[in-house]
Image 1 (cartoon, rainbow, N blue to C red):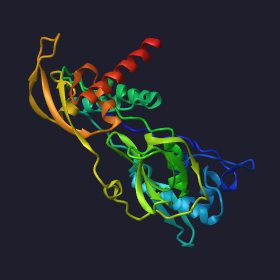
Image 2 (image 1 turned 180 degrees about the vertical axis):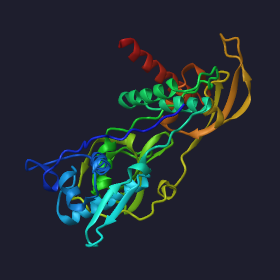
Image 3 (image 1 turned 30 degrees about the vertical axis):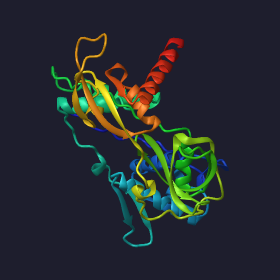
Image 4 (image 1 turned 90 degrees about the vertical axis):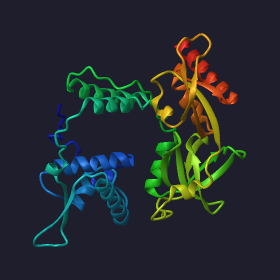
Length: 346
């Protein structure tokens, strides 16, 4: 089975007025939209694009010359980090006349073939997203790959993976990181009362089944990590863009500091099920639960004592039964009952 990538055949980015405005009205688009528009414009341009052309024709480049140069420099670095072959060309006569283009031939994805096992991994990956929009896109892509795959009777063991979708604050924080703008929000830490935080946002990272903001807490004068699910209310901008410079290198492990509290968890797993959580633990023996005839595998593991663990185990349904600790078992059962009530009401 072979899969290729088709590039847009016609320009998709309309001509814009200078400094990122349309008809004299300033545009308000996300950093992701701006970078995508830049990529599409460079792909479809028949020749190289100069800085002035990019500033006039690509949405999102507004402000003075210095602001444009900073934003454009970050966007160029991002495209190259993503593996997009951005080429810089200088005029043979006027060396200060610099232009940019994307090497379309180098950007084309070569033909790719998948083994039955690899197709199984793709199907597993498509099940990660719970968000309806991303799940629909993932299912569509996987269906095309599976439809073009080789006919085979092999099947991968049934697995279940879930990735919590970003919280509502995600986009606002991402914009603040891109614009280097300080933010404020109410935060309910696990070990302290709710408090107002003023933070210079540096980076968003996925860790232990949740999203975290890494940044400088201005009140404490130290780097801190904030779990997005513990942010209460709206995230508010504080100050102007370009208010700070993030560190050149950020070590997430140093920012997180002390490791999370771990609890010993005993699970009764259905045979050949829950492979991902099974791989994180140690097989202790077997156990036949009341009302069942087939023995289950008893697996023991240590995991962070956080709400994400409850969500993860609840996602396996009847395939993973919590034996210990009792508090975790009760929390998982409550989550399953709540999900059943929602399903019955819909």
